[in-house]
Amino acid sequence: MNYKQLYMETFGCQMNVNDSERIATMLAETGYSVTADPAAADMILLNTCSVRGGAEEKVYKRLANLRPLKTAKEGLIIGVGGCVAQQEGEELLRKFPWVNLVFGTHNLHLLPDMVRGAETGERRCETAFIDNEQRLDLFPTVKGNTRMSSFVTVMQGCDNFCSYCIVPYVRGREISRRSAEILEEVEILAMSGVREVVLLGQNVNSYGLKTENEPTFAGLVRKVADIEGISRIRFTTSHPKDMSDELIACFGDVPKLCGQIHLPVQSGSDSVLALMNRGYTRNSYLGKIRALKAVRPGIAITSDIIVGFPGETEEDFEQTLSLLNEIRYSDLFYFVYSPRPGTRAAELPETLTREQKLKRLDRIHELQRSITREINESHVGTIQTVMVEGEGKRPGQVSGRVDCGRIVNFAGANTLIDTFVDVRITRAYQNSLLGELV
Image 1 (cartoon, rainbow, N blue to C red):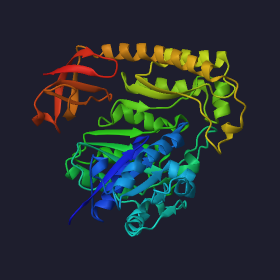
Image 2 (cartoon, helix red, strand yellow):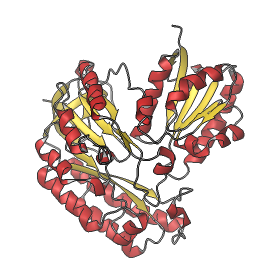
Image 3 (spheres, rainbow, N blue to C red):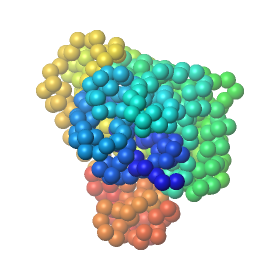
């Protein structure tokens, strides 16, 4: 087969990265191979995210920058998928006449047919929702995986309707895959050399709660751990209200489950959490953190914080700072609140100026930097098992992740890639560790 060249840009989260891999799998069967050079591409696809503010503008700017390529190369296909495509739909075709196709979050299975149409000059938009059990059957699993780590989607969508969040509107309601299909996919990945799987979902620990005759998420984790060849299991993203005692117990008695969890808190104030419709209190969240630390001492916990939510007072913000000091997250993702069209929070009156929000963000930044650095320095002198994934930052180095998820660079030959090795940590940086092979 004479392959045409596909260039993909992926915005946002790991779910989008996984979707992009699925897209590449589908389009390989229609004659496209992935290239890293947009100038060499016969098709350019943007897989977008609209969770954060400014997402649409970022996509619009990128599409404007692609216009000269479209003009210079006859037959070049340009497409937009993901959340912004779901949200904007036909408007993208209207605003950008050089865009050939727009496909929403439930329409990946239509892409091969849409591409064939685009090759003959057709422009098309598909953004219909499929909110039934058929949805996950329509998306192919990734083929030809040669990495040690692979994403495995276990569920899609979200039913929580947090007041600030657009995910339920662009990703749809929660649907869980059949466990037999998930386990079969993991077995195939293990046979191809994958040693770590990352179980994915918008609200991953609600897996199976709305499906009869399927295990809970904790039950699924245990079944994945039984698969020969799999050495590590991670998952993302969890909602605190669905963090069950059963799942917490897995961190204590499932050795393959890595000592790392992302558990977004968003705020340390009960009044703000109520406005956000998060479904838990500060104390109930702290109870889950204490339980996790009890069953897995040293577990690395990361989180998200939204700064400047409508109604957030100085006292509310101080409660968030005190929460960070009490929990001591290993990493934190923090953002200034930005209203997303169609969400309930977008109707709330803003109570802070942009300048006030940014000052609070700076305070979060400085506090978390010091906490992260201290946690990283605590690893110096320890011996850690590293899953070597690729070349390191400097010539002669390789790089990989330890159980807690931190990146380690160390001197070693490329033959170590795709193996597990023990490394002594010799130095800590803000975002990574330096080590030496034991």
